[in-house]
Length: 288
View 1 (cartoon, rainbow, N blue to C red):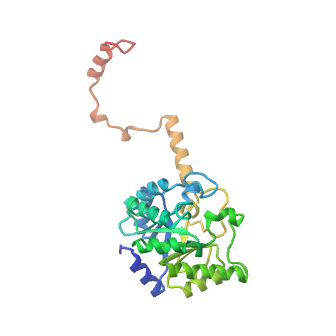
View 2 (cartoon, rainbow, N blue to C red):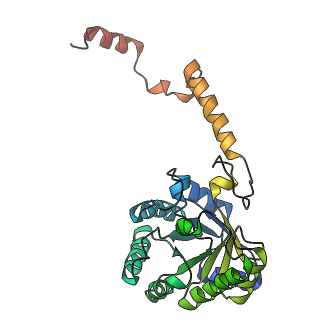
View 3 (tube, helix red, strand yellow):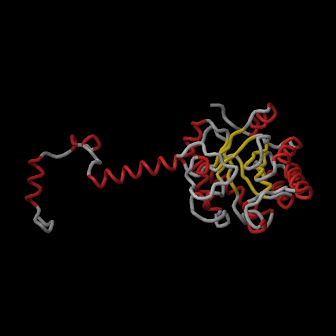
């Protein structure tokens, strides 16, 4: 497998080749995804919902992102890994943003950080990239702003909003972002942004006109349960397979069917005579 890096991903965009990205939060799953050949993994703060059971991403901390990011980073040799900067880890000041971006890169040994926002976070993007840390932007529907938006809603509808989202894209590119996630952006607008910028655009609820796509793996594999966003395609029902397998395990344990002889180590056992002797040496209270 060819190693994915910024140069190779930009070359893919320039050649018109699509880029695959998927979320991941742990070593074992990241290893499988790398073997599957995806170009990029996003350790998203979506872990607040998928791994921790919150209603949104806001409670996720820097320390948690580093633990999850480090786990994924250890599994990936050829996959390009991006780690989210969580809510309030970069908004307060440029200095805070640079410090926390550095913590992620040092603590996780990954390839880039991602932060949400347009014009408002351009000073942070510029400062982080000036330190040699690649930045992926995130515009359109930014989950950390869910309270401002009044929910998870499409962004860029109507002429005024479309102009705002486009200007955000141009601004983050100028600030130094090499990639941008476009979330819940109308198709024509997402295609225009992709055409107007040299950044790699990664769509989620945008359109096939983006340079690449990202999905939350629990959504695409049928593991999330409950509400499934319109933009999600289920490529498998792994959740149902897992439930069936665990149910069968539970049944066999309770019936005594598992473990069978093939799952034990009889050759390493003591002789019946020795075990009988041990039995005699200890009384009912377990005392010699």
